Image (tube, rainbow, N blue to C red):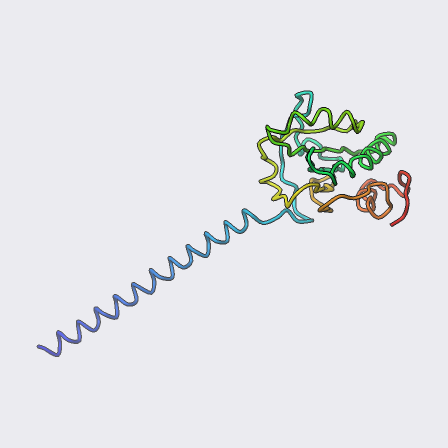
Length: 199
């Protein structure tokens, strides 16, 4: 009898261990899944992926939704009034914008101000001083910042006619140079550019 009881006890212990292992595997799988979801949430937008959609108001109060520009190549630029490189980059963006608009190609430029409530009042004078004519959108609450996982400003995304990112540019660029507009002009089938200076 004592031998039978001992054998049953051993069987019970093995069952408990197996149960503990299964529970441990389930918990581990849950942790891995949670970490993967979190890391995916904070993963940066990469070329080839669809550009995260957004709807923002311009300085006149009109809504602009990125997905509504399907069929056009879209130049999406993130900037701020306090950003010196942004101020240096903007004039070349204006040259590019006018150049493409004059050619009536399927293109739009959207410059998203990342100024928060405290500096948003500076946007109007900034735009007027630089003579900017392309749409300037306002994002005082940083909604697009979270979607695009910005590393800073300026940051630019060239989005193709289907809504995919074909180029991501971190930092300022002179948009009047051949190398700078190569991908964008490829989308628009343009072979010459504004005041092109070479690389």
